[in-house]
Amino acid sequence: MPDPQVSAIICTHNRDQYLGLAIDSLLCQSFTDFEVVVVDNASSDRTREVVEARLGDPRLKYVYEPVTGLSVARNTGAKAACSAILAYLDDDAIATPDWLQHLYEAYQKNEKLAIAGGKVTLLWVEGMIPPRWLSDGLAGNLGAYDLGDSLVYVDRPGLTPRGLNYSIRREFLEQIGGFDPNLGRVGKNLLSNEELHMTNLALQTGWQVAYLPAALVAHHVAPERVKQSWFFSRGWWQGISECYREQIAGEAGVGQFRRGGERLIRGLYKSLKFVADPAQRFENLVYSYGQIGYLIKATQGLLSPTSSPTSGVKRS
Image (cartoon, rainbow, N blue to C red; front, top):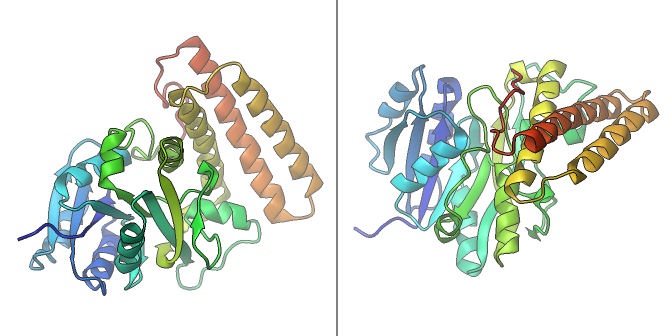
């Protein structure tokens, strides 16, 4: 039989309470020529049981990856998949019925399209409402992503599609050697920016990156994340991730101290400027805290250029 046109990949780590919904949202897609690959990334919960309960569907396959790390799992999923188009859905997300159809059509229409992703809305636990201190900007840390209702070709890494609703052309992925295992979440460490790095590489090499509003996904908001301490931790790791991304992109050096220092001062200034606005005040405090992580990592990069992104800066 010919290979499917699209491989939908879910990389999962200890999310058995959400995983079944994610898989089911893929198995009921309107698009028919696809497979689903679930990469179990060293889970210790009921993940395997959740997948095995659905293995009667021939489109579904299970792969175990013992090395923890989102980028490692994504690369494992790509190797196990058969298609030229790889569509990644988070294990706590739900794809709308036409998700794969919209992604597939975008790649068919544009041979230079390397990366595409769509709008992301948030699914709140019943009875929970967004806190007053949660700004639209910080909602992006929970996965929210909305560039409007029209097709957008992304021209800078900061607008890149969210990894929870993300697709990539295999040709491009192989061209750049896969996802960088030093970026992306590893266990509880909230490393990120792997998608920004991929977008940067795509734009530098003549490929295109697109936002597809109709390729809609909804993302569960875990109650434990709706705490200010989680956002501070997320901001800290965002700073570290950005610093490390610059290092591997050849943008490291003393200029990082100027950039990080300016951003730290700007964030603190804005937190004072918007002292009467709890959402804007908190967003800028989180931003400032992230710059401290950025500057610490930059210092380590100068003192020890071969240090890993987690060396000496672990935060949980």
